Length: 215
Image 1 (tube, helix red, strand yellow):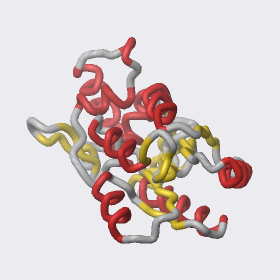
Image 2: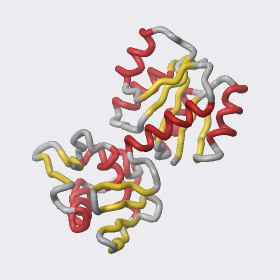
Image 3: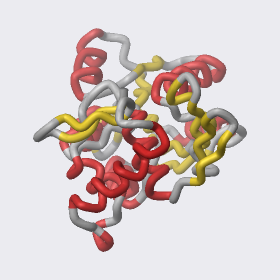
């Protein structure tokens, strides 16, 4: 699990980085501008953003990311205790808040809850009889193991993480391919066709004119 951590308080950042790196891969920055650049260059499983930053607001950053169809779950760290910032954060697309000061274990539990909800663990049960290993790129079904390509694995995982909504082919192209390797929409259709051989049409629905939905 790869976390993009944006926090400008050097003391708090140092403590949290040491704690988080015991369990997760962490990329840290002090700058909103740098966080935006990193989000464009790398794929992250979770964002942890401070709200009040020297060069802007974590809320503004998340709002911008959501405008570009970035659905990566996000937790805000904040010293604010008012409802106004809470409301703005959730409207911008936040998934959780944690208020300073907090216990390290509280942050850990919030991250684990996000992992469970979005299927960010290494082994994901995507159906009663189908288990998906996101690191090994394998599907186990009735004691049979199917090896997926890295791109098939990424597409399946993206659909599963966003199973509460319809995902367009354009969104997957934008989020799962680098700009210099951008294929046509046929690439997505081909991958979906291959994945359906393993998980079935009943789990990857084609929503005409909109895209695909995992059920």
